Image 1 (cartoon, rainbow, N blue to C red):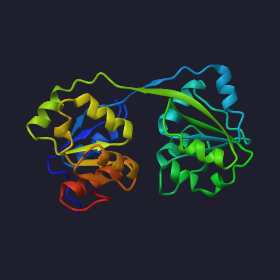
Image 2 (cartoon, rainbow, N blue to C red; image 1 turned 30 degrees about the vertical axis):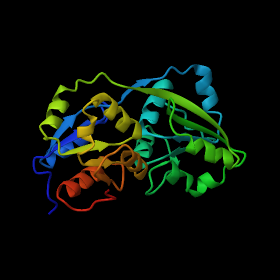
Image 3 (cartoon, rainbow, N blue to C red; image 1 turned 135 degrees about the horizontal axis):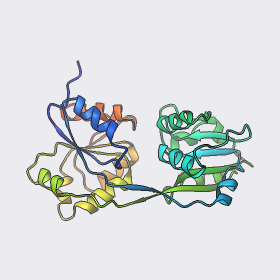
Length: 259
């Protein structure tokens, strides 16, 4: 039987409204979830002409479930499922969001849920002369677009949401840190990690000493560069996988990749 969290306090940094599933899993595993959103997500204004142009493509690639949700809002609740347009997702959660909207997913990585994982798929190797629209938040990594362009695709962005620093009360977290009562931190994006450190200055040095569970090797590398001392990388970015990594880490075993 897998050991639980044994009363451990775990910081959950997902945006408000997206943290409940992980918090529930932590509670069910005999842990305490401390909510501290480090990113606020809001819709980006997209005009009708931009939306129409975005659909004039061969591939619509969604980089996150947020991209799906806010695209649906921008399109008035439904995107046309045209046989001329194929849908791709960077991960299973994003693919599930598309399927829940009644859309067929033609390309999604099986294990490596990232831009690199998607680019490794056979369908993304044969894009010369194709028009690709990447649906995402404002800003972000350029790896996906640049690689597709290098492979001969014409790439455009449809940016449907924006991220900002939330006004989150930090007194409870600071008290928990200073009394050494925070047992672990969960992070699912590099931006969330950087925001967390910025929001906790000048107490960020205390945070760097706490065990950190991250959702990808890329975030783990960033955490290492930012001075975190104990990092475990979840094998997948799902809530269940993050909980498993947390449980293993806090019970003194080696999970994912640890530094």
